[in-house]
Image (cartoon, rainbow, N blue to C red; front, side):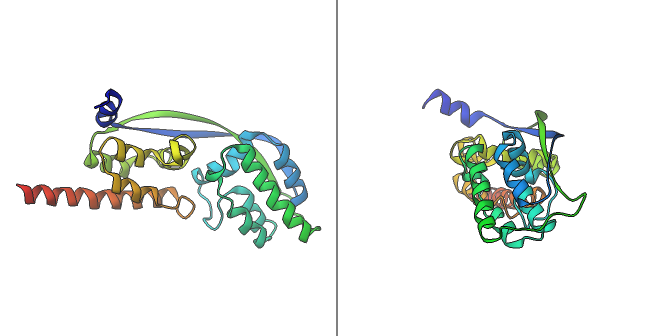
Length: 230
């Protein structure tokens, strides 16, 4: 057996957390044309914050990014909001690809509705960036039981980092939880179930609940099997 493979199977899961400090870019948009122009030129960090980090914030799950939420709630452009929400940011290989997708949707909408309404004063879209810090929280899990206990008590910033943000780090766009369960515990079917959870349909707390339930079922199954064998 390969030495790397052995190490993977012996590797405990180390929980990490991310926190973000928001800083303003000084840019704001009062209508769709201004939004489009700023999206086309604003920093990658700002695009990242308003899309990938959407689920680090507590938002209305009708939307999947800040741009869609602003279009739907502040401009009341529901059709556009739906189109922007339908962009799968995790399928984009780069921020440039995501930026192009956002601009393309807005351009197409403006062709049909060239004179969209303005946001009310004070309700403009404010472009922000974040400084993100990732750090270990001092919690490890060597098996499913330990993982389940930890999962119930860790901060939601850990859930975001390992389930959402990981999709930009881990090969094939999977999450840290699934990868560890498959590589270290050889729980392939359980890993597939967790991978199948739609990241756009749940809050971080709902993700915690879904994964905890799946792991609890697996732990119970393992205990029953162990009882039968004994």
